[in-house]
Amino acid sequence: MKVALITGGSRGIGLGIAKALAEKGYNLAINGVRDESGVKEVLNELKAYGQDVIYCQGDISKAEDRESIVRKIKEHYGQLNVLVNNAGVAPKVRKDMLEIDEENFDYMMNIVQKGTFFMSQLAVKELIAGKEKDPNFEACMINITSISARTASTNRVEYCMAKASLSIMSTSFAVKLAEFGIPVYEVQPGVISTDMTTVVKDKYEKLASDGIIPERRMGTPEDIGTLVAAMATGQIPYCTGQMIAPDGGMGIWRL
Image 1 (cartoon, helix red, strand yellow):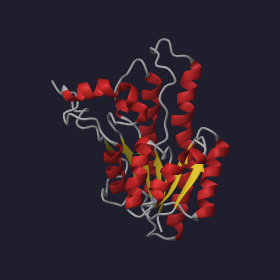
Image 2 (cartoon, helix red, strand yellow):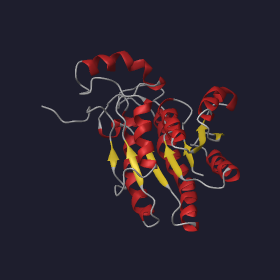
Image 3 (tube, one colour):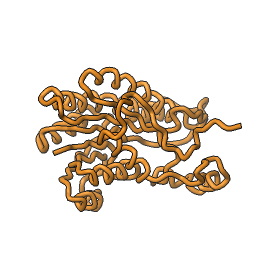
Image 4 (cartoon, one colour):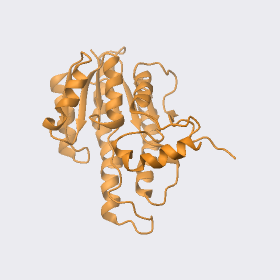
């Protein structure tokens, strides 16, 4: 049995990852903030892959919710093999960096930065526990950040800052977990077609066709899922702490 926790796994990139891991035989713990009744269709879609699927409702910015998520996984499965930190939010409002207020800044940081770190702190202890019981126990940590972690955007700087902080979190966990034989990866997606990017879809499809994205298309959740599944199943060995950017070449420096 192999178990993967995917935060923010009921939609968008997270759902693409969940599908890819289900295809690889992973039982799933899907985290989201919506009530379970609102994600029944998604859960049934994932169960159709033939794996066991549970829903762990919770807001990762809240300590009691993080504890509830991990407790439910332990009670239901008794183990955790893969942690995928994918949960995130878009800015409530896009404001120039000289105008952003503390409320909007804290909203972003509490979820993306603080929530992800403390969610990891809890979940990683389960990965370590598995390794300590059995050296052959398969365990892996994967952090989904964004091309925004290395791309300046003055009207959503808090998002870029939050994602950039997860890059150093990834390398720090890679060092910490190396002694246990647990690899850690960072994935920096480019412009991915999801409900979060709907408002800019026309803009980026035009930019893609004009060549700002060399592959001339927006990415898909399936693109990210394929990469994450390769990481989780050990297909990218000897690379702990490394970042891979599935961005269609958007990040290539060109003159």
